[in-house]
Length: 469
Image (cartoon, rainbow, N blue to C red; front, top):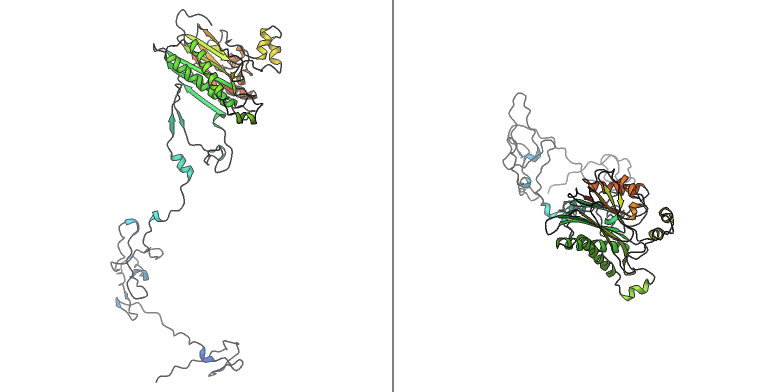
């Protein structure tokens, strides 16, 4: 029977660290059994790398690179050999990721060697992972919104097509705007769609702005162009101003402008005389505003002192050498000739307290419009209005010019015809949208105390024999 080799005692007791003598089996201080101390591992010298073949270690190393001048031998790495698992079975040979062709093995290596980084010697033998099984995160909604195709829509009044782009926050310029009008990224409240509106339809253009003092835009407009039955072109513009003392004035102006614009296009295409068409369009607008007051009795019980929705209206038509205007309220139409040496003119009379005072001879125009009651209107569209009396008039200008249709948000800063002619750009007849922007900017620069809306209709060179305006 063989005996276990006797271990040499350590220099110090592993339990109490007291010095030991050679041959001690137990610690003299604490009695620790020194035979339980594990033997020191034997020293294995480094194997000598010799010729090819199986060395003393039993490992089949690849042969060394042949010597050549200037070309260093490639290093032999452990990863150059196929690996085995704990049971001695060979590991599966990995294939390059994503189906790319396998790189050739190092010179002298077995053909089944796996790819190795020459810099680090790291073995890339992990099988590729499908991207679909490990999605990183949900797609960014801002990217999805920007990738969506814009949708186009055509207005029923014959206006040009408009393109609706994804709404992006005006503050951070990155977040998407939710249905409530707030940025999903920074929470900033966004300007409402009606705060600033621009539209161009053929030769007609209009711009509307909330102004600098009001919390919403209660103005609305409709512009369009069509053709009479004989093919003669016709252009039209309708501008409405909501009555702020009434309930839902913004809805009233929008309903009136849409109803009037649609009625005008339909009537003109059927050959109705422009003056009659404008009269009927104002009646249609009045009916649309009246319909807004049809609320259930329970709703009126909670707000018994609120007035019905109401607004003013003014419109203009240019067709067959005629300039036709119609209105109810204090929105106005101005005539500005291209030749500024010719006089400009105001073509409407206000339905207002100031106009009544001037018409009755009780006050001068300057005194009446300086009074705080000047803008109290005496005519409007709405269920609470007096008997509807649309005003219409026809003119035959003898020269080209521009028709300015606007609310008091503009003419408060250019009240007389001469003042209006001074601020209308000289090229307004060929650049109506630009000119409308300039006029709105003039009102904003003046203080922007009210909503401001202006539409411009160029009047072409009249035929021979036309009368004067």
